[in-house]
Amino acid sequence: MDLLLEEVKAADRIYYLPLLLLADESEQVVMNYIQEGTLYSITLDKRLIGVALLVPIDQDGYELKNIALTEDVRGMGIGQRVLRELSKKLKHSHASYVIVGTANSSIGNIAFYQKCGFKMHTIKKDFFLKYPEPIYENGIRAIDMIMFKKLL
Image (cartoon, rainbow, N blue to C red; front, side, top):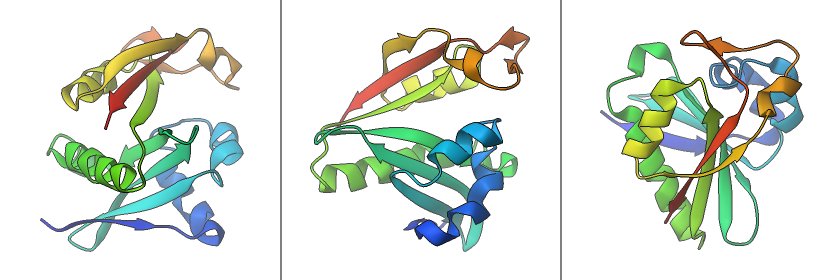
């Protein structure tokens, strides 16, 4: 399967909003960061299946602000492949680490990031309380953001 990550031009980012909303349910929040960093489209065998948004934090690190794959390709190892490709891009740009955050209620994401070599780093208390609508996953309200870090 041919996996390709391509940089999306700033003027075209709005077309990727539906995919970004797969990972972040608040359109208002996504619109606040959609023009930050570098947005990549993710295609598999020439079919658009997702997006990833990397935002620089400082001269050494980046935050994976949003990563989303369509439901039909989840659980096939593609997310791990995408993270490996993104790590290569970051290493090439001389970054030494990447962080990513997920909700305390996102049980699958918590396991996924650890399987990909990320380690729990910090917790942003009450992060999701600022969202316009409460988010529930797995019967748990999203309140805190768990931040993971991976050294490159």
